[in-house]
Image (tube, rainbow, N blue to C red; front, side, top):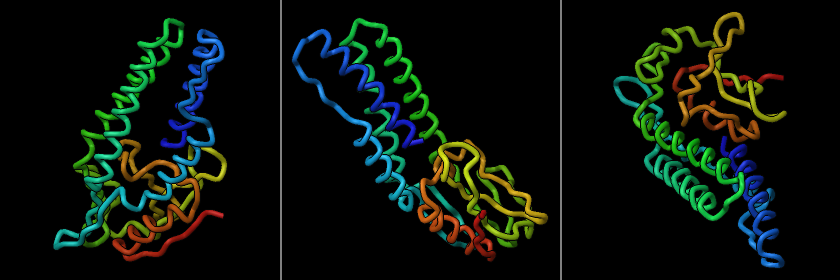
Length: 208
């Protein structure tokens, strides 16, 4: 999601730059470039290990969104929404509607991130997996943690899921913002997969 947003941000601001140059002649307005956005997204993906904390207690294992990551995510999306509102106020073209629409999407993302910040992914004794109050897998049902090709995103993206008997895959709910999403490289997905596998007492497998 961060990579897609980075590219969208770069593309939208690129359009704004062209509009600004058209109105202001030779004046230059440079805010970002696609390469900058891609590098920023790459750094975000490499830092996924800090987006959750893992604890073990008498109730099993808990994967909880880290306060630092929640703050960074909410803060960056809020700043992004503010930027697009500012750009909308600075232009009189049809880009104003587009900028305001993107700002609205970011505000929705902020609300989503804030409301789900306390929802915990848990592995109970015996291997029962829950996300919040929702049971994903019953006790003893998980045979492995799979790093599989992503269902969406770009070619080569992957995501972590739970493998049951017969090779059936159970994916984390799309509402689990802090634990889902596409990893750009399998090396980035492996730390989370290994921790989840340790909690379940199973191994990690990868799709061919």
